[in-house]
Length: 189
Image (cartoon, rainbow, N blue to C red; front, side, top):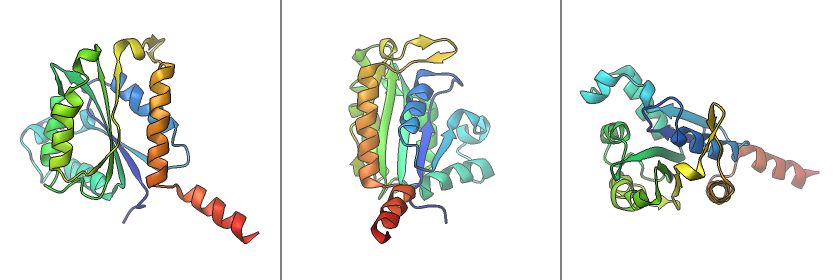
């Protein structure tokens, strides 16, 4: 079985370079002592996802990755007041209690603040239906808060501060092995 402290970031954006991906990378960068795994849903076989083919080996591996995680970060763009269809399709493949016992951090991006409530009215109910009870404060960023920066996107100071609080909440719930082993070494010397 994998490390029970593992953090998995599920990216529900259909684009390879997206603001949602940038937000997810930023939170991962704030957790340097953790084993962070990535699950980019756009890389899963589309036909198997659409057919809900749970016998597909890649879909089985993706579901097992979520199952083995202690913390699941879900990053998605908001389209037309809802999270991505790609994310919905994947979440529908998880078992009914697929997020039970896990800490979940929702990350979302949208063109404006008008879509902020999609997290509370669309995404969180689905996470709760999958058994998630420890849902951290979501981080929602608008296009203006994630401006283009060369080939990618830059996280503004307000969003960075909110991601830092989220990373600290993850650290409280799931201290890294390095921090735990560093404390143990200090206590024995």
